Image (cartoon, rainbow, N blue to C red; front, side, top):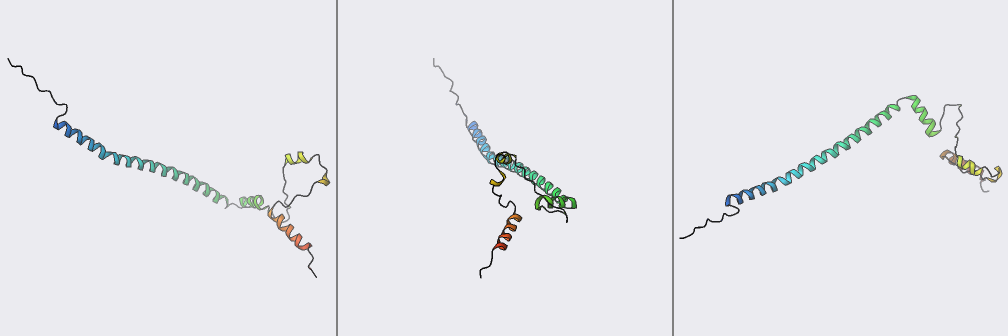
Length: 138
């Protein structure tokens, strides 16, 4: 008696191989658009964050511009920045240097040399005085 054996089934049929190839092609086809979409979403988030920073800066500058419409604010800024005051008022600059005062406490008053000009107008005035003190050559 002749024994018949069943054929061994192949692992992949022709249809399964084609279906597998189509699925890989689709996955590869969708990879690039998905990556582009995710990059665009990241760009949008960065731009929105930059826009929020710019809007905050605009709000700050708008508030500062509104301050410059107030006469008292202008007077305060002139006093603080340029040491300007109303006519007849004497302006004084108070220097606060506790470390320097403690260091100089043991020295005699005559041994310290006068400090040089501190502000631009002191420099200007000292140059005017130096030019005035020079005698023209005869």
